[in-house]
Amino acid sequence: MEKVCVLGAGSTKYGKLADSIADITTQASVSAIDSAGIEPKDIKASYISNVFGVADKQVHIGPVLMSRLGIPDKPSLTIESACGSGSVSFREAYANIAAGFYDCLIATGVEKVTHTGTEWTTTYFAYCSDFFYEGQAGASFPGLFASMARAYLTEFDATEEDFAKVAVKNHDNGVLNPKAHMQKKITIEDVMNSPVVASPLKLYDCCPFSDGASSVILCSEEFAKAHGGDYIEVIGSGRGGSPAALQGREHLTTIPSTKIASEQAYKMAGITAKDVDFAEVHDCFTIAEVVDTEDLGFFEKGKGVQAVREDRTKLNSDISINPSGGLKSKGHPIGATGIGQVVEVFDQLTGKAGERTVRDAKIGLTHNFGATGASCAVHIFQSV
Amino acid sequence: MSVEEQVKENAKQGKLLTHKCTNCGYLHLSTAYYCLKCGSKGFEDVFLEGTGTIATYTIITVAPAGFEKYTPYAFVVMLLDNANLRISGFMAGISTPEDLPVGARAKITGFDERGIIIERQ
Image (cartoon, rainbow over the protein chains, first blue to last red):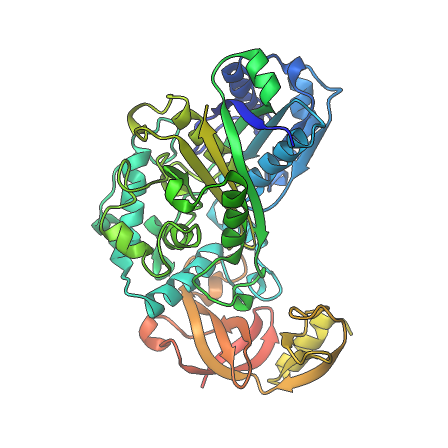
């Protein structure tokens, strides 16, 4: 297998964006190309992650991007894996370089939904559930994670204030990220007093619906060395699945796909959870970050809240979780999120993260799942 | 009748159709086509009474389209009696957590545009 490197990375700002889906896809891709210092003709193919292109009248975005980049003859593939689409498109690009099919690829993720309003997005996102059992019975995504939160509160020593503290921490980080959707500090009281969306989750327990695009350039080690410039190495990659509906999970507070994907990635990298300096994890809701940090092996099951309470997941503490601000503060343009996490790791490990830099970091991890974790991909990166 | 249609028709009678593996005996919801444990394809129909206890739930106040008129309502996950099996559904008339402690008794009572209907007993 070829070693795979990330040679460049770029994102639009996340938030409510006025430009079209095709425009933001191209803007992020051009910033990744410029960051890598390559030319479009170096790119042999593209992997595009997107879920609701239909909302902005553009599906089959790949050929549109390639045409705008002046390489319409190059192939593209659009990938949908709900909120985990970005990490899957990254994985496909990774696998194609590892297998030796290509030496340089672009993986771009995009979503443009905020113009459709809360009801449309709530409704369409529910189509990512096991619809016969969940969406059809009125489950929203906040509702499904709220069901996990209720189970966690019942089973473990945890409070709603503990969950609120995750949101406060991620907003503290997001304030330092100029690309973040929600660049404002919040307090535990702000979270507790925000309107209930699906009890026990309140508005500030939930990530926002965001527009945005992120893009990375992946290449072989040979290409990276010949090209020069900053790059990082992909040392682990794993994917896993879970029963699509929550009802089918052995435990209601564990996401099996996270465990499967991370175990594969740790094994490939030859490391354990203890070796990870920082992680971008899928905190679509505050409860998700707590569960993620347990399933990834950073903390024992049921102890994730204690770590939050003791500030062990803050920037430059025991393990910096979501230095970018995470989905909660940076935002969650669902097709872009998994790629955006890699952008953050690239920036962190190449000294471009500014005030939110994780000090002395060598190893970063990305964790991104679809729906309630029915699909998941984990990647591990190392500075060079 | 399709598998989903069978689930709907049985739920309307307050029953839950399940599939028991004829090879290893593992019990599944009837949308399973292959056994989760042994991979075999043979199932026999087992009709459960649709009763159980609430494993977890949420009370939804910001609803997907079509459900605004029902808010607040609960989406519940119920652990079925005498089976290591859970089923999700819609529960009306729940507005605060005091209305529905985890562990409360509940039963499937129907199926309509709100999916499988579960009521507190």
